[in-house]
Length: 450
Image 1: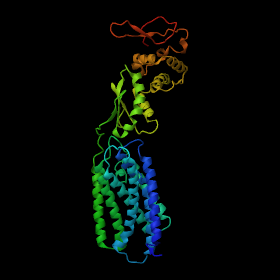
Image 2: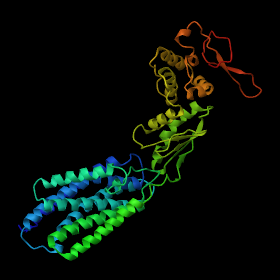
Image 3: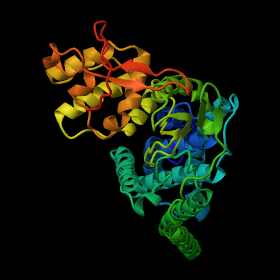
Image 4: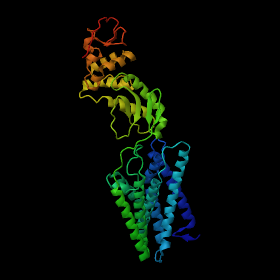
């Protein structure tokens, strides 16, 4: 069987087919792990396939290094022309880009079955393709200049460590690595201009490496001149990347909203979570009704924004729509209503109210008075608890809750009259009384504040 580049044609075809299959499987697995669960947005797909390069890139580098060392052994002592030198590494680039295109196609088939928010970022796909080409060329050059059996795995491991370090380093260095440069943010989106500059840099450095290698192998001045031009293109891309301003603030978006029983608004890509969030926050809204934190609208905010509840509005963070996302969002919102208290006693009383707002079992707390307070509070009806919170919301927020707010504590067993608070009905109706410590034997009614 005829040999080509140190391996038979059949072996080349089989190796290419196996590489495409492995790269596609790794790409899908890696992209799936990067996808934000439940987010129906094309940009989410693009960010995921770019993120998959952390695994597929080193594999592509290892494959290119393996072919390069076989190629060099077969051409030892022969004169090599420019086209003959470039044909094999370009073929490898085509193979790995084919696997990238197949990965994108599979994810695209999945996404077209559902309505996706926003446009697809073609510059982002360009970064992914240029990044894979760079990995392949680095592997090729390493395999050519170090034709040893251990070179392919070392090339893959080296690429993984190098680009992972760049991507996680922060600052300007992360812009040089093939990647999105930062976690994907629904409200900030992906910058097409930044991706275009990054593509210029990646293509420039890839072409410079490949042509520089070809110039050394062929000793042709024209190839070297083209390599220098590629270096200029790569420098232009780097300059544009470093000169680009920092990502802009979160963009204004047209929310997707559910209007009943309360208004819940999410980013359009997360509209599938409206019903579940509405159910979770309707209960919280009913318990906060009549307090300064009462709300009728729930609105998603960027993850970096601090949650500051305002009258009528409950801002929330929703990271994804994985299982339990509504409970996580409601927990974080309830925690933002009142800061943790400095001291075990005060914080124990705060946790009782927090647990009730979240719909969780009331905690016993670290102290005996907390157990008593939880038992006393659990003995109230839902209506009584809401009235209690209306009266003492400021004390709840300012960490002034004490045993006197919960029936007087375990030492008050002989004094069953903890007091009461008045609730005035509508104008013209007789005054109603709400007992803070309900007891069938209590008859006295007095105004009471701790």
